[in-house]
Figure 1 (tube, one colour):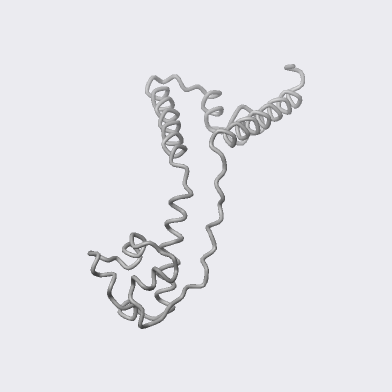
Figure 2 (tube, one colour):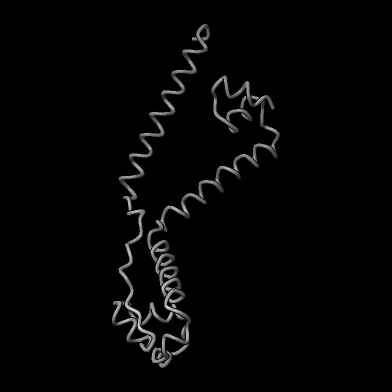
Length: 158
């Protein structure tokens, strides 16, 4: 195999692709996919004379959501008029932004995030320890930086 470096590179390339696809399939089955697109917001019913509570009832928004959207401090603030919070366009914009942020927050996979940071921490700790002990050779440095392929090593002449 030493006589055919291109064949060796091609085999490594295929193995890496198969490995990545396999891990992606396993990851998808474990974590499951959540829909990436937020729910479409129906046309908001807005009347300048409505109170915030009436606005919420007309648009099927719970009081807790209304408190976050309009930054209300107390339950009694739900009786305030909508016109105190701006024009219809401004209110629509506020509601759309808050609901989009809530949808994004709900769409995050909170299990994956700490795992990802944990794996990065382990990888970087390992590299730091190797540097500290002066165990990093030319080949290991290239492998850590960009893999084992010959073309990458030629590009990464460090």
